[in-house]
Length: 311
Image 1: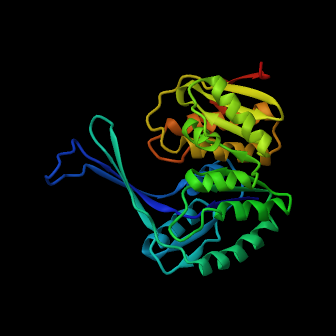
Image 2: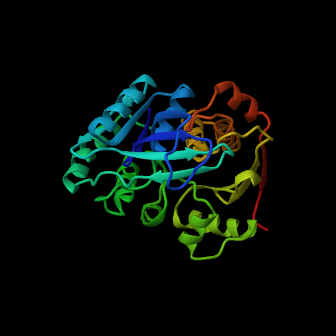
């Protein structure tokens, strides 16, 4: 089983309007409400790909109930802890030109006793889990080392953790040596304290993380593809051209694809190809954190991966 951790889930609300006019009444053309948060996106894609997924974290209020109902419809097992606070909403406004403006609520404050109660759920889940993904921001109230704690607990039981977060949570998490991280160039710069401008800089950042004990590192370069490092070997992946309509959630889809690939015990190159195919397939959809299996399979065959060593 794959267990996905989402500490700060949200209802993702997408408002489609013709034009944003500050200070005036806005007429919304269309509205979409979906269960969101990076870990929920990972859950959805891994489930679509056919794997058994259990989602966990914190949910509260009517917003939390909406997300519970949504993930149940997806066939994802719900092991979220119910809290007294209300799960947040994140609003994306898309205008007629396709420009997107986002408003992200901070989310409820999680008490330390809530976290300790949740750890009991987490420990129970690990008895039937092969891979854990931990994704997204930390809600108010949780210490920056919260991801580090759950990484250490999983590692003690021989379980791989795939971490995708940012800021101090990423810095603390990396110190706990997760199996996989997927930083962007800004996050690599934060971790290493070095400016990242070139592919050579990226390689140095990957090597730094590998030497710190992170086995597998992938750095996304957007349309230019990605570079991964594993056991002293580097892999540059380039996806084929696609008709991209919405890149939001592609990173989460990549993480889901990588977790599923490892669960299926694909080799490193095919794991990278599969994850890249999932990220690209998500960009073809209006929905966030969603792929079509036929697109993933088609793109997988066209993803190019070049293997090399640092010169």
